[in-house]
Image 1 (cartoon, rainbow, N blue to C red):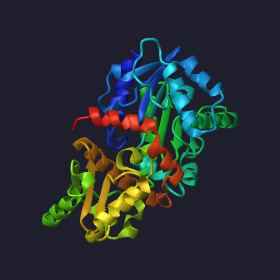
Image 2: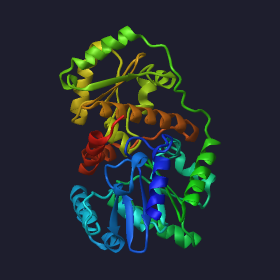
Image 3: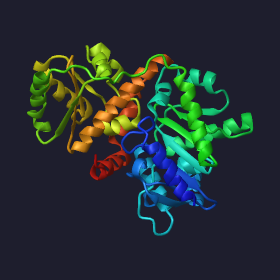
Image 4: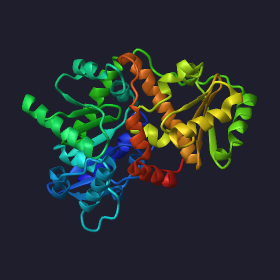
Length: 373
């Protein structure tokens, strides 16, 4: 049964930290009438058959034929209503915001992940040009656009151009500042394509992230922990600390921290906030937190302290844990971008939209409430 195979491939990549973190990514399978796609808020690593939602393909694909308001927030609200309306009778789960994207791709199986190695390419200054040299005609590159309706429409347009040029369909889609999509007719092909991509990129890497342990000052860590814990906004928060060889390199000073201070992908915004806070002087820690709040309309989830390490905060322990995973993912990406011309963050407008997007808030809340360590 193909749904069982969908569960198999979903768990295969969902359990691999080289491909996904937290509840990101999605997978799907199509038959002639329906598409089965991961429901919003479920994790690929532990997903079962009931974690997928069944959508009517004709209803779903007709969305692209409709006219939507130019106002982005209103458009996305209507688009979400249309997605929900495409659910098969009896479905109560909320479909992934990327359901339309999966529907327009012709392959039977679609796997969408966010590998740090791949995002070293998609979040780099020269990624677009290097992809041409490495993957020739086998891929399509999608410049960053908002996930959901806009992304689906952009992919459809690019696929049309690609098909006219090559008279075939690409099996690889690179999403700038986002991730990877692979499409194929069976699981063997899915794995083969992924292996080809990862093997090709690994040959280009000049330096891998070094997460080996380093000596830490426990007394100073405790002191800073108390500084943060006593700040009113963090009194009820869970706080986690970490340092390693790679973290030590980026917390030497504010210039070193620049390559991880902002957001590489939408997932980083959802789980680690719109930016990472760097503290140079402990005497100004409260002032720095206040300024962060005024800039972003929220409090920092990642607080790096010069020459000490990184603290993450969360209402629940799992939220703080995922914020740390997100920071480490950003650190991996930053390291890999060194091999592709240097780092390139999402721009401010893109970050602000994701930071206030109700769809991402919904996904984040479900994962934070359901996930256990």
